[in-house]
Length: 349
Image (cartoon, rainbow, N blue to C red; front, side, top):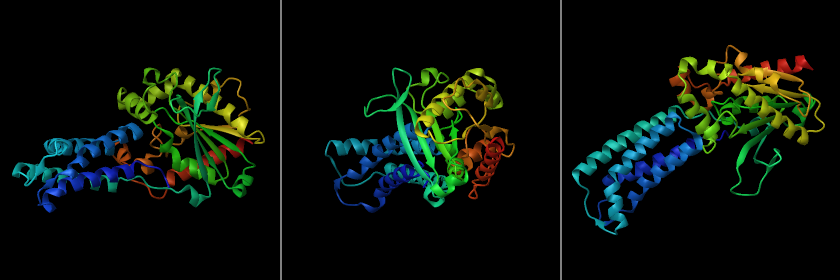
């Protein structure tokens, strides 16, 4: 199943709801232990943002959990001081009821716009992820050091042996756009692997593009901070035209080709796929393996969310707010782009 922040959101909403509802069903004198759910929900909402970025659902839950924490702050302090509670004041009950209404609103939003799950197992696709650290010699290797700089998350989508034979064990290398993490492209990557291609997705946490954003998670630094300093009207032009970004893409593809070449020595066909800034293909220097084909998702006019991935499935609320698009349960656009990718690869063989 598609890994999403939804389960963390459910945990936050449940903890906040129980915290606010206690004013209605707890009447006995006791230590108010349930109030600890308020700060816990607030902390988890912060961890959600660190893990998944500043998407609209996470911001909404952060704000609601902050309100719930503020409302329950005095109760939490009383609990920490081991003071018993016999009754709740009328203002506290009123503010708890308002908080509960906000929780219900946030729950409805999260349910309506929850990501559309896609199970790799259903399509006979195996997904494995490995974190690699950059070594002193410039190579990337898996490190057992817990505090090592995990510069690259390498996700491999492997088809069944039967499907792989149909494409003669061809390999596709993909680097996400700077405005999106690899997760936003998972519907496309899984369906591409289902077609028989072994897909290597390189999600680089830091490159020359992000500069001082090195300390931030990919989902935060790429989509949110870089996007927020660019106006929407010029956002795509900036990313597509600025040679700094295409240079970074080229370097990342060089690294990814070298890694895949060491793992797949018998594969004859290596194709590269990007989402915008396709001039980077011409800047790839001395690849470890000759590139058989290249394809740019952004060149397909039907793909309206270029640069942000397939957010109609992975982030429906963002797709609705930014592009006015509805959640798509049919996977039409990812499937269509898989067909276009296959055509480009097979035509180049």
